[in-house]
Image (spheres, rainbow, N blue to C red):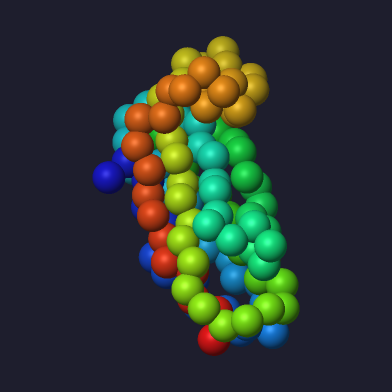
Length: 108
């Protein structure tokens, strides 16, 4: 797997909470990423798009707004990009997703 998400699952209070995780590029190339959620009403991610160089880890903030308890999914899509790429959305607008990591979101 090119990306790792640590801790690998998100468990938060259904009444609202923030959880910080780390997204790491375990590959050998610079990658663009896009984070999607199956529930955009109750979850917000920060950042949604970005770049990660090989071997680098960045913090990802998952914010849960108050709502009913339940399970959802987070998908982190990635695509290799050249060093001169400056727009992290561009590869995904062109349909260049090379894979994804799926993370469980659990609100208790």
